Amino acid sequence: MTSFDLFSIGHSNVSAECFLALLQSAGVNAIADVRSVPVSRFCPWFSAKNLAPFLAQQDIGYLPYGETLGGRPSNSSLYCDGIADYEAMARQPEFQRDLERLRGDMARSRVCIMCAERDPLDCHRCLLVARELATGGVTIGHILHGGTITPHALIEQQLLLAAEDETTPDLFVTGQNERIAAAYRWRARAVAYRVKQATRPSFKNQ
Image (tube, rainbow, N blue to C red; front, side, top):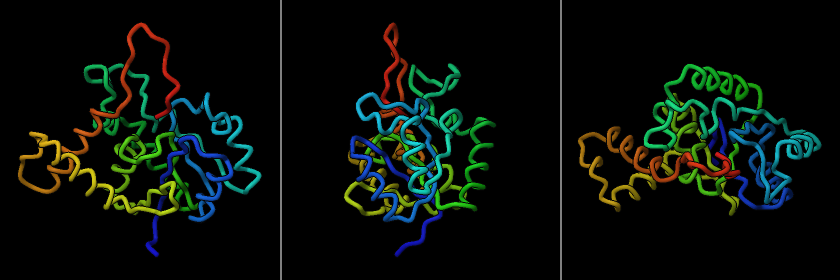
């Protein structure tokens, strides 16, 4: 079995019991919540006020990281055309500082970063947080709801193939690193949080 330094999961709308079973099957003993708004109207058991004590009963720690590693920045300069700019967010000192804090937690616990979206490629936990950590040498496994754990490197290859299928112009560049960066940029523009004008904020978490 592949050894991972860190795990990733999206809670989606599964039951608390199913979610717990997925964590336990991977040996996770700490959740790093990277939701900017750790609230779920439709699955209240995933709201932080309910999730933290539930996890504690199972000897799983709860680590709130949404303020700095979340996908909905409060700084308006971190949006491009109203869309959260993951590349700009990754350059923020606060973001890098808390990546280092997360690495410290990883040294003490078997950590899984958590957000809401089921598919890693629909979520900033993969396209922003995991990308930055993987670049720094962290080996990441994405826990899927079928029970499998997919390496981040394989997710990247799926991303690259999807972007090429869309014939993204930026992918016609030389070098694998440039192609992957362009694929990340293409996907982030499609799924990142968008500012909604004159409407109430969405409770969809990133």
